[in-house]
Length: 445
Image (cartoon, rainbow, N blue to C red; front, top):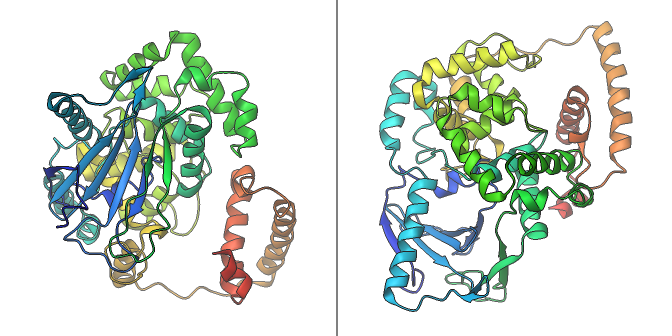
């Protein structure tokens, strides 16, 4: 392995079966990690790190690289922190900071939990999980900062991973000063290195900053829509109740010691936090490992493979009763770490992970399992009455599309009511399949 590539990095022996950065950091848990390629596209090798992943904390930027059996880590610090030189002056300072970074990584990735044992347990109980485990090894839950997680999942409402990432990173760049600038890694074997540039890294802004009344208008101008008020008012509630960022953090961490029901009750008091968002927070930062956040995507998986009521391909209103039914069913199958198992199945069914672990693109691995065991009947042609009803719906959808066509990049279907938004999204997918691809389509990419 190249010594130049790993200069300044410490090595932590850790097989990829215990942690896969490529899966964990891109599956919709955390939204501020950035990935930088170390090789030109198409020349990857599992024997050496293929990417560097970076994440900005309050006082340092953590940089990670990974090979098949080792996690490499280092931290980059600002030259001046709070007006005092923060450059290490001795080997003891270096060692102390390395130990701090290692302690962060062990806590953040929950490395004290043996993931291979959990995969064996889930595979023995669930043939569906067993069918996807080999492609999605190393996918574990993070133990994140509660405040950042609350805001991130307020942003997740009616949203996708790409736009949530843009929003969360925008919060940092606009409301938190740059901590340090680091150049992008050199791409090994590249003849043109002009792509290297300095990137500024910003910590996540504390509640006191986002509680200011002017924050809502600024966030709206940045494309946050109705989520702007949710974020500002939630920050304001916390500061009004607890007085300072330090006390807010202390109270939020204290939720880890509450029962799941009591912690959920506290979270549901925040503006913009419903049952699903609260359960994401419980699972991803408050140690409630049995919690399975349920949305329409998870409900579809539960209907297809686990006998939950409903018909695959249709959507039932997500009532509290149905939510509990899905949650209880999956928790009974997967046990005390049901939320962890859910994350693997959820990721395996994401379109963005359809080719993950494969040499070429492939359909969803869960879909492959279903289609290999179930012969689906042909879809019957609609009756004349259904065709007329469908035409009326198409007219209404077209009107909605006409309104959307004049909106900004961030004001998309997520601003519509849930049912109409779902129909518009479906119409767009169907239209994209039916019409031929043009050069203008390709230019958008």
